[in-house]
Amino acid sequence: MDNLYPAHSVMTSTWPILSREDVIAFQFSNWFPTFSTLSIKSTVILLPDEFRSYLEADGVFVPTGSENLCVHRR
Image (cartoon, rainbow, N blue to C red):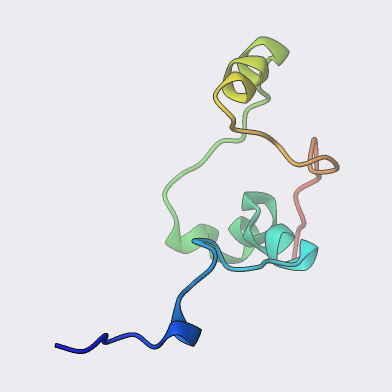
């Protein structure tokens, strides 16, 4: 069987390219006020620096500028 996927259709990245606005739109503080009646009961907690260091040791990170963002109320 011939190649089912032409060379130009091969994805070069697993993840889509997201703008800063896309990332902010996905943040809990941005969408939760709008969908709170459709979501499970949720509580935002502040993470201690030690826990953040633990996550960063595995390659998980919080992007610069997203710390302590206020919840947007609508």
